[in-house]
Amino acid sequence: MGRVYNFSAGPAVLPEEVLKEAAAEMLDYQGSGQSVMEMSHRSKVFDKIIKDAEQDLRDLLNIPDNYKVLFLQGGAHLQFAMIPMNLMKNKVADYIVTGQWAKRAFKEAQKFGDAKCIASSEDKTFSYIPDCSDLPIDDNADYVYICENNTIYGTKFKTLPNTKGKDLVADVSSCFLSEPMDVSKYAVIYGGAQKNIGPAGVVIAIIREDLITEDVLPGTPTMLQYKTHADNDSLYNTPPCYGIYICGKVFKWLKKQGGLAAMKEYNEKKAAILYDFLDQSKLFKGTVEKNSRSLMNVPFVTGDADLDAKFIKAATEAGFVNLKGHRSVGGMRASIYNAMPIEGVEKLVAFMKKFEAENA
Image (cartoon, rainbow, N blue to C red; front, side, top):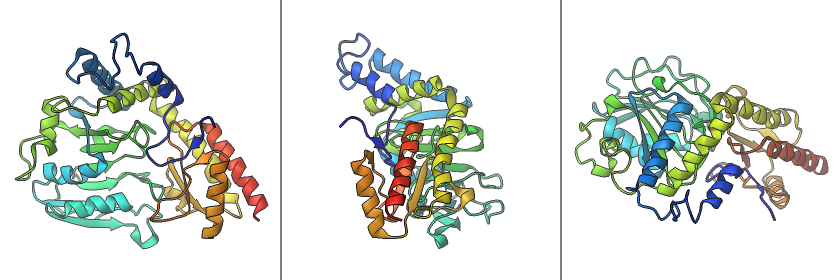
């Protein structure tokens, strides 16, 4: 069948170049006589892999020296608990709920202290980002939490919330490395790799050093303390070695593309092709308010569930796969991460035009 255009929200498309390199090195990584899957995480060879990956990530994001980069496990979901366990010193936190994952993080935080929802877009099925310029932020709040790009609903914070001096924690799983960001504006940035960076199994967390202390909530397990991982350069226990190796290759690929400013330009161009079509289509329509649109995840519907199903089936047969919307919302969603080539979006739009003409 050959390679399809994979619009999955995650695990998602990876750069073909990276996959070919990994395939070539599968049995023998750079003359070591073994696969990265087989080597000790304590070996000199792997030590170079993880250190190079961290350095390339630091270069791409211009990460300040007073931030630690951690390669963790447990998916973004484990961070929903690790964040309050490590940061909730006053047992107070403010959450902005703009989608299902932010809602889950908020519910998890309530187990550890007084977590409050200070803004939400649930009233309109999370189809917009609320105004966060003047929020009722608690004087005792340890941090303010956002999910910066909402994978299911296709929304993105274009302006960071005014946290009134409080630390900002952001889940960036689905927009990680899609554009430049000022790391110094955040206390913690984290994201699962399986959307825009690498294979499932790795979570990257970037944390300001002063927040990494032994002063955690009583009973916090050793493995769930940031300090455990920071003190051991992400090698306290066996990390997801192969996943980190692929992430490292993706970082090098991103540098080769010209870095994050070049990626942003490319991603804007790709997204515009799809949004421009949706804005003039008589059959398909986008579900997100214009000023909240994500560059990475584009949900759309026909307004008829049977027609949606017919479209998804026809698209799959034509080689455009994983366009079905999340089970909680239905419809369609095209995730067009960094590794999705522009021709994938152009061909999808051409297919949508044809489908519209045949089903008008």
